[in-house]
Image 1 (spheres, rainbow, N blue to C red):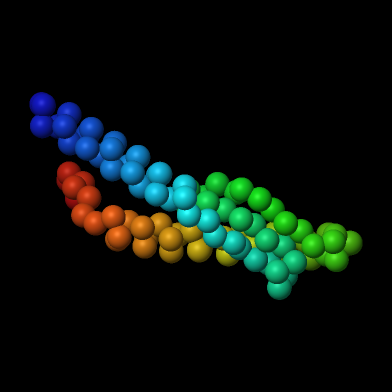
Image 2 (cartoon, helix red, strand yellow):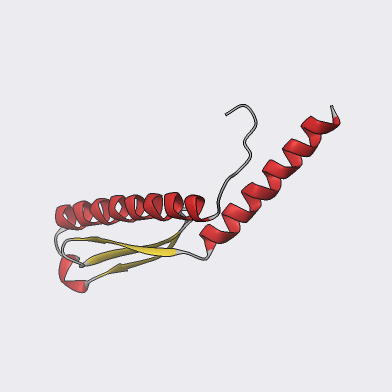
Length: 96
């Protein structure tokens, strides 16, 4: 029983380390050739959105650009997450 509790505590510590490392990372997703930018941290929290004034007059183009920028940022964060996890080394995940 104590071994299980120790394993759970270790997992909690590892998860905290990962979250902390990812919060220090940022990515920029782009849409409409950079007219829309979404800046996101490594924990997939949107930190800032920038929209060019030129695109504000076309609602459909703006919506598509926001969608593209968000998807671009998420893909980049996923790559950062994978890289960070591999850099941080072996994680002892019981049962895996």
